[in-house]
Length: 133
Image 1 (tube, one colour):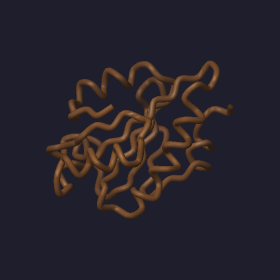
Image 2: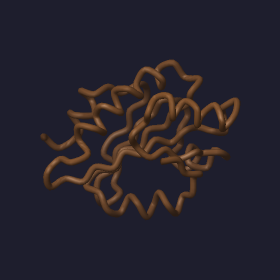
Image 3: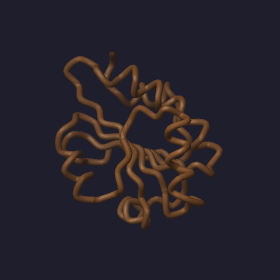
Image 4: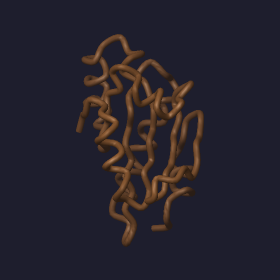
């Protein structure tokens, strides 16, 4: 699923799950490219954790990319299994104060910030911040 970034969509979606994980990334970023398979595996394994709703949203820093088609080709080639917002004008990055990629931000069901991680995440880190399976 690919979406152009609209802050109202993101705010509305954050009201429902027990956890919302935002992952800011770019195709030109080696650590971002390295973490994508870990995020895909996590999303596959944790999407149906009993009694817990986890939403992971990738936010591509489209304003820093060579082209949107390059981003779409990357998403397709990696078979990304989570929604990706295209931050075409840097609005999401600005709203969340993103200074570098990758950056991952975790919110609870009330929209309260639980954790921010600058740098690549891996499966074990994502599993650690999530409810147990």
